[in-house]
Amino acid sequence: MTPTGTGTAPHSLSFDFRSVQQTDGATLWRLVKAIGTLELNSAYLYLLMAADFGETCLLALHNGRPAGLVIGYRPPREPEAAFVWQVGVLPEYRGQGLGLRMLSAWRQLPANRNARWITATVDEVNQSSRALFGALAKQLNVPLAVQPHFTPEQFPVDHPAEPLLRIGPMP
Image (cartoon, rainbow, N blue to C red):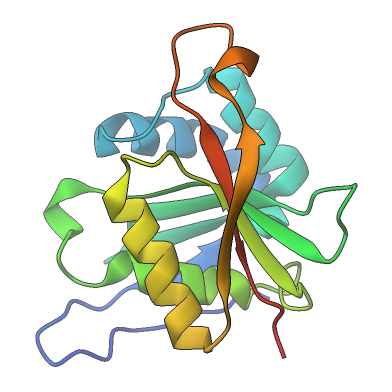
């Protein structure tokens, strides 16, 4: 059983939310590519995420068509956390509050529901993602802490640091 939800803002569109199925790997890859603001990884990685971590990933659908996604997993070394790897919305659905609505629905997926922490890595210049996670912490009325995590030297290519955002603990 997967949760569904609809928009509550008076001028917003209606969306359904569901966990990712094994057959959704290609959809995830195409969606990330179409979103245009996310780092596109190999198609094979999205197939693996759908097959092995689909219960901790979410698709947002508008009239049955993909509109956004949250790709995440439960880190084996931190079982009380749920990690958000990628979150994105297609350009035509931006401005509807869909990012926050997706994160709220993602948190309610059965595989994520008992997480005491939500974590993500976000570089310092990505103000829209920082604002999104800040809004989630505010909505949940819990702290958001930022701590060092991945340094530029750890990346094999030129890449800014990716500090860890840590939201929680959840009540």
